[in-house]
Length: 444
Image (spheres, helix red, strand yellow):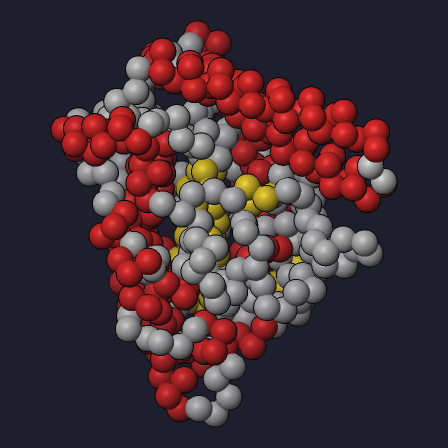
């Protein structure tokens, strides 16, 4: 939520690029937060988690190698050409499936929850908590934002995502996130807004939510059961927003970090109303900025597959490309699309590996301390089996990158991977969703 007015936004855009880069400075935190931050850093840098979902998956012959083993030694499909310089820094895992997802057109809505979003009588949609929010409740205690949700706009249809989010609260309500790079930038680095203005805004928001909660409480008495359930979901979201406001108040005296990163110009980044390649690269830069300043340690990104195609001057939608059949032209467009996704993924690995981690006492990089997933909840033609699963980052315990690995059983629950990532990041969970094991045995 924005704390700035439109006028302060304009001032911020004029002055935002004049700052200098500063590392995370724990001494600027309130005393209580300093103590908790120091306790979490004993023994090394904090872990960062990132999930990136592209909606529809890749055409098999362009993406999935037939053999397991070293990526440098096995025959790779043509879609892998742009990432060959980073083969030693990535892992492909096959045989992970999201069997609980019963919606074959919408992969991202259930990819991080592993829930059956349409399988409950009396509910058009129902979800459960996503694994990133389990991580955020643990890893986000000491950061300005527990988690950061990046999105593509609802108007950018045909991505294969479904719903409005990739992240979901404990009650199954969506965290819709930000589709504007400028908004994300302002969340990370603030604007020319005084403390008094922020306090005034927070008080106004509090008053609004007090009214909403009162109205919903008084209305409950006259509603039937189904409507009371809907209202309860609504008031749960209100309480969640109230907690967000309280958190913002706690951080009011903590100065925003400064940066040499220029404020994104949404009108240029989102040219022609489309989130395309430039928007993806900008969001990736902002993810790195969020980690460098320790603004958050948990990020999700619902990426704009349809927008990427538009920016490549491809008029077909991801949905059309997923039904390629024997159409040679669709095969070629699928290959172009896969190569572009792999190029973006490879370039992001380069940035992770070159970015020093200011919170690492041993001088490591963001790559060393991150766990990154890039894939989606669907394979082509709306299948939820053997979904694309690329991993990078040095935070995975016992995992040596540079391999194509097969989960030993066909349709191994994708939740096994989420359980592993949570455990490797230090989140105390035994199992997540429908997991029946961890993924550690796959790369032991």
